Amino acid sequence: MTDGLFPLRRERAEVAPGAVHVPGWLSVERQRELVEACRGWARGPVPMRHTALPGGGVMSVRTVCVGWHWQPYRYTRTADDVNGARVARFPAWLVELGRAALVEAYGDDGGYAPDTALVNFYERGARMGMHQDKEERSGAPVVSLSIGDRCVFRFGNTETRGRPYTDVELVSGDLFVFGGPSRFAHHGVPKVYPDTGDPATGLAAGRLNITLRETGLS
Image 1 (cartoon, rainbow, N blue to C red):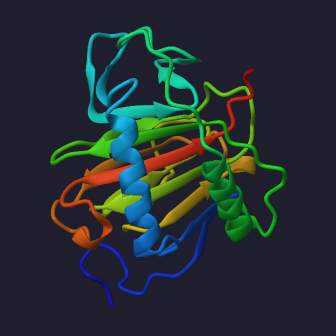
Image 2 (cartoon, rainbow, N blue to C red):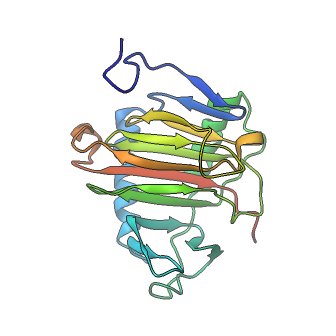
C-alpha cells in the first residue's frame, strides 16, 4: 500500500552503499530542543539568510552556520559575505549527537568529530538543487537531520546530477547518513510538502534540515 508516492510503511534502509536512512530517529522532545537551538543560531551572531550564489542567483532556502561559515564554495571562521562576525561555536552536545547518529547508522562512530553544522530552513516553495558536499577536506560522513514538513530527498550518484538517483521521503525526526562510497553523491530536495509537520516539535511551518560535517580544517 502507498500514499500515492511513497510506501506507508517506513523502515530503515540502505539507499546506496554507505547511505543509510533511519526513520523516526529523533524523539519529538529532541526535535523541540533542536528547533530552539536553531532559533538561537538564526538570531546571530551571524543571522540566518538567503545565500547569494557566484552566478548572481540566490538560494531559496535560508541558511545559518555553526562552527564554520559556509559560502559558495568555501568555509571561513567569519561571515565576510554577511556581517563579518564570527559564527556561533560548535557545541559539544552536537558532536555527541553526530557520533550517536553514526552508531545508529553504521554500528560505530569511527572517531567522528563534526565541527560544523549547516542549518537550512525551507519555507513554502523552497527547494535545493542537486549538488555535492565537497568543500570539506575530510571524507567523514555527513549526518542529516530533518524536522518539520516532509520532503522528497533525491539521492543520486557521484558522477552526474542526473540519473540514476533514488527518491526518499524524509519526515520530521528522520536521520540520513551518507559516507564511504556515497560521501560525495549528488543530492537535493526537489519538493517540500507544506503543512505536513507536527507542531509539537515547536516548528509551526516549514522544514529544518541540519547537516553535521567534519571540515578537516583548523
